[in-house]
Length: 606
Image 1 (cartoon, rainbow, N blue to C red):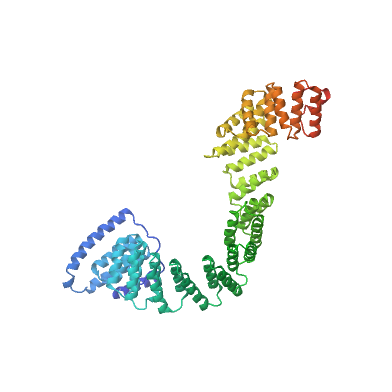
Image 2: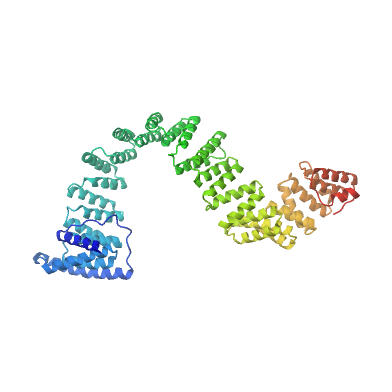
């Protein structure tokens, strides 16, 4: 409590001389008044303005403030400052405006009213009172600074520029504000004025790095490269042991196609700091522009070997390579993998290292390594669904059913609302010959699909297969029909649905139409030809079935296709040939449970 009292006493002393210091730090976001508070304040402001107008008319002949009035004004001011500190701007302005009514020509009161209005969001009144403060006390820098802040917050940059110019002109020892003035000129793209201001600052303060940097910006915008480089040389000369100035100069040469100079200056930076990753990256870019890929690759490897190269910069560079993959040359693919490996070595506990490496391995067709790398990333950050998704997709692509089931189970503990995870979990159960569990996962995941007809069709396709395994033909057919609504050309559904109908001997015309549609699109696919042949077989079109199977046998080694061919031959009366095909089927691989009976009895069993 004593601290607040001391602050208030400080403001009393300022009030007496009309001078004010700014509050510590920049003001935060304006606190908005309620509509009721704003209306009340505006009404009081109008009443006070009316009284003030009357008071000003009498001002010339009015006697000085009495001692009582002076004490009243000071007490109201101190109270107002207290409420500003407490961020109660309604009460603050109420007190301050009453103090103003007693003493309108006090600069400190005007300043504090302006600040309270700024903080409460009333920028119009904030401007007016801040302008009054600068007129009443033109030697106080803080009044100008508040006014410039209010103007800049309204994007009134030209007005703020004039305010800073007045500050520098009116207030002694205010040269440091030349930098603020230069920034305002730059914000308005008034480059000549900004340059003149910086040169004025340079005359006052001598060689200052900030001045040279800003002058470089201006010269580059004006396409005056030589002048910008000259400022860079000044910086290097003034800081001979500081590599960052040398690096900035090298980058400027490189970006302006002065490649020989860029190499020279980058090598100068390496003499100051032999492990500088930035210098190596500049050289790598220069060599790339000069079509020297081996030298560029060597410089990149040196940059990535440095622990000073941070992870985000590494990822940025590697993402550039990812955009080139997988169609880049093998040397580029290998370089990208090498740089990713170096990143993991330097940042072995950062998930980003493994993620970007996994992406590169995926795109360069190193899927198994990529899956293991993504799993490493999950050790350090398992909260990213996209990483789990990549792991699951690779499991599915590699046909690693146990991994697919294990990883989808783990991922679903973290992301139970991700329908794609339920889809692959259901697929994994199907592959494990667990159709009941597969149906449960697929039905649950299907309910989570939103505005994605393609994914919905994939769920229905899998459910058709799953219900078939459970011998629930009604639900199987319904799922297939739903899948064909989503995608009438779904080859998997058309083939499986038609084949299962043929096995049941149901809706054979529909099965023939669906299977024929697939064969027309894939006329040499042995699996689809076998399905089509079996539909024809069930329709007793044995000649058509024979033609389809003979075409399939040109490319297949599938024992079941060979067995089917034997069945067709038997139906056509070619019994010896049929037995020969059944014998060939048995030697080739897995067939039906009836094959041994067929061979034993030389008869067809179905």
